[in-house]
Image (cartoon, rainbow, N blue to C red; front, top):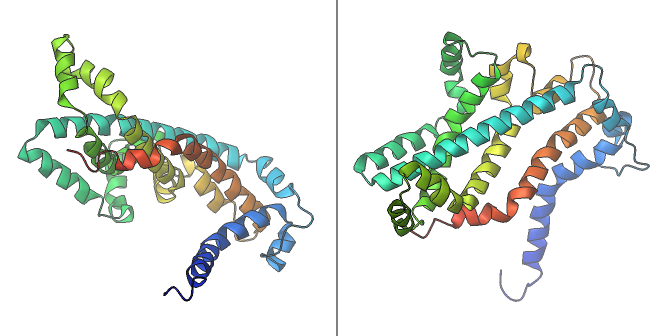
Length: 275
């Protein structure tokens, strides 16, 4: 594009943005329309708007949304907290060890991220069934921690390299051991990286569909993502309620992102140019 067509670039950017925003627009406007209008005119504005779809989701006799919300909050909270703590300690040890095997361990861990979760789901379910954790919340947490731990370690390692060793040496002179030095000196400096890891893992675990569907199963309930799937039956398709379900399922993770977003970019780039 040359300088003789200054309008071309903004026009192209607007068109691309419109394409990406169209699904969000459809999902949002159909929350506030009756199901009959959702099918007849999905792109039309909700005139007049109604909250009947939201009320039907919140007042379902089976409590599908509330039950799924409790499971999602429990699964996401436990998974991201355990993964963050283990990843921070593992990254600190691998960086400070400075041996050839630390790079080999990181390479093996990152290689695991190249395998799609669906490919390894069968052996995972066999192992969980053998140790008695199939269809349980601890089993689902264990799967999420094991799969997302390499990514979290990778993010923390870049940031740990930017922490001066002199701080740890000063703490050692004052009598602090390795454990106390890490938690009181190093880990507080990893706050931006922790925020980035929490956001990434929180969104991934919250939006995950396959793991809770197979690991938790019908006996242990469902998450909000599985609840959206189960709200659509072969003989009942209330699209207005489905869109309302999707909106309500998005609000908690959106609020979580907004709470940590000021540390997000800083945490991703903080250790990229150091060490």
